[in-house]
Length: 217
Image (cartoon, rainbow, N blue to C red; front, side, top):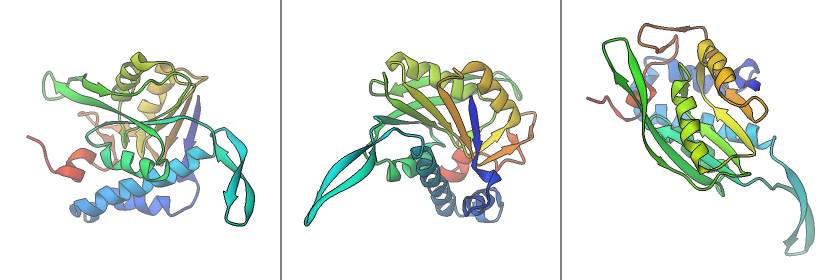
């Protein structure tokens, strides 16, 4: 399995991640969502470099232009609800992609212990396609694993890209154990060292869903 940490290279991506973390800028939910979208756009561009390309003759008003364009059939999947603005960023660049949605949530057994539940999935067939699973926060990796298993009921993709903004080291190791090495590339913008007692990433940024769309009951 290949792990690509885009935050290790200096680019404007790091400013967008810094603003997501900033407790003062977080108060502007519109900017928070837009920064997630912009990171999705950057990641979509970077991931697209790994697609399969071929040369096509494109008719212009004055002749035929040979252009290398991608051949992959792409499906962008997101884990609701925090993944929605991230998904939109990917879709802005990969606008001819198909789309899939998975609903996953934490069901707490007590204050600190929970199980992950999958309630809903809507997806096209995935066989021989390039699947991109987007989730802005990769805390424990359990939601990603269950979303992947749910999506696998729709077929076997040719390649899988797991895209997250901030991941914990624990989640990276968990995904390495649970998802097929030969098919999967993990893309992140930052890797943080710790999880707290509630399995939130530290320093992380808090609850991405609440910051995007308001607190849930």
